[in-house]
Image (cartoon, rainbow, N blue to C red; front, side, top):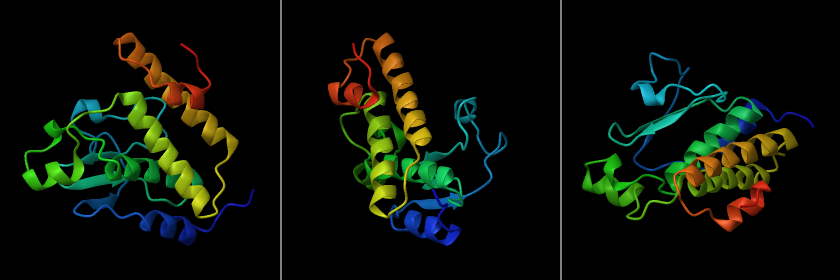
Amino acid sequence: MREPSVATLIAVAECYPVPGITLRYKRLNAAVMRPRWLLPKKNHLYPAHANLQASEALLPRPVTREKLYVNLHERGHLRLKHFGTHWTRSPFKRTKYTRKNELPGHVEEWQAEMFAHRTMRKHGIAVPRHMTRDAKGYVRDWIASDRRKGIKIDARVEKWCGTTG
């Protein structure tokens, strides 16, 4: 599998702007990732986050296939309105980026993973099997977490991950 050029990877990411949000490419480290709940988890290769109060999202620069995937995953969260109304006080941002009824975490993560997969394939960039396997593992972790909280698990998500109740 030939790696696409950096220009191609960046061009694909730029096809999906998020109006009203400044997308910043930064080296994300502990100094940038405050408060504590934003610190990268041990299994996150390229940490990223969106801050609706500051109207910005910090994303990895899409210079490799994996970083493009993470970049698109985070853009998917923004485009799919995966923020509850408590994420912002601004009425404009509330109507543009939030939804009244929050989805379970496993559904939001699955939708963001599907957005990244479909976008890469739409632009002719293959998604390696190991990335799909990692994505399914990540969503399975969310399923386990939501199951412990007593949240009903979406059958479509379980089917995609290959898990059963």
